[in-house]
Image: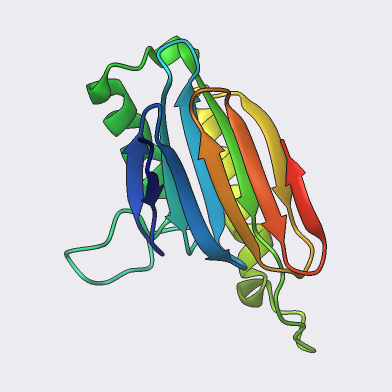
Length: 162
């Protein structure tokens, strides 16, 4: 009997078959899936913000920021037995949910989240196999580590598989 492992906002979790992994409510947030299709292990992070550097608190939620979540997810997969060279990525989300007249760079949270995730994937040498980012609609995503398919349900735009 398979289960759907849920990933909350600013959360990270791992999955292996027959289970799948899902997150809902991706607006400007980015869903990052790292997987080793040889070992059939996958993990997902629901990233809210691009960088943790501006946080003044001594304790941070590592799943909240692209810079900390990508690295933490990678480390969790390696500890679970994934081969570093076999890890690949898929991402979805990063919408610009609201339009601001100021055009401020700070308010471009979705695009900045996507840029930060791609930067940190690149630093780790993880190939980005597929993505569905941008736009202005929310998404729900579900990844199946058995076939490495990411199902994306976008509000008012239907379902696609990458």
